[in-house]
Image (spheres, rainbow, N blue to C red):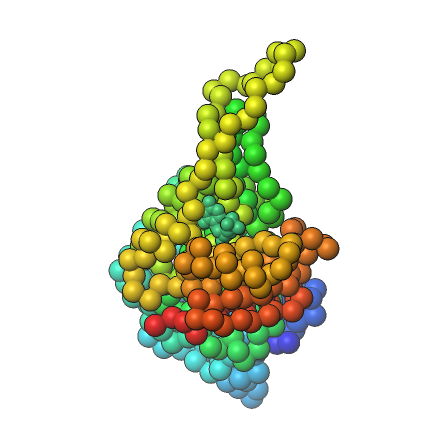
Length: 398
Ligand code: C5P
């Protein structure tokens, strides 16, 4: 497919050499269109050599080909990274004072901005307003990652890692024209992922096999549909997805606290995490030693049911709450019982065993609705399952 990689004048432009590589190596034809100032950071020769395509920054070159119209019209995706405060501002008001901004006006395909700038610039009301304008017009504007910035400062403003940016591009290209429907734009979605660990002592815990992949797929697909996502990740080993606010937790009690806090502003909460039903009643401050005598039994205390607490605390009218459940037996009967017990709007019943669910790339689920609905999602990639779950959530949002 044809991709226009728009490069803004930010120090993070160097990361886009890697993004370009990932795009070309997966078979896409990429035209790099830097802003004139971006060439201060990475020169045209680098972009031309890596893309195998000509590079220009102004519509005044190759005028007979009318590049500012042709590039925009032919593109299947325009991906702007790093999107500086200046570039976001020019795009928001619809200026076309260089080739890239002209392409942004002629493109009718999905457009992604991956902002990178200092925290102060990102948080400035002018930038907030520009981001809101662009999102309102259907562009995907990713939240920047938090961490070390150009100098010694840290905070939100980092460009996400190239592999994560590539995942966003891949997902949007795969969605084709459906990617133009940003049906989660303006929505705050909270997703939990992974499995909790309940500590016995400083070195041991009770845990489970959840990898977090289904929850991460939910977070990633929601971003591609324009959502603002808070991902509460319990003990996962996966890279932070681009554009997602990741909150890390360990235990069920921590997860509960973060979920309830994030739910205050959430349009939907999807609890994909495997939460321990029980925790050790007491945590030893020192490592439990082998005594030679018969070991003490581990006494357990029950964890609060977070989904039920979310349902009870539902502050926003119309907030959609989704629970997950792993079952080995009769999916439908057990699922209906669980849905009634939890009080959520939807229950995604996972079939576990036979190579499904844990740590795999595929999943097969049955989604039960409190309204009596029943949707079988046949075996598919976890991302596809995630998209189908969002379809069901979107249909229930006010
Ligand atoms: O009852 P069960 O543990 O099978 O329910 C699974 C669902 O409930 C998942 O959505 C999980 O995130 C959630 N859960 C919870 N609080 C618990 C245990 C599970 O919210 N203590």
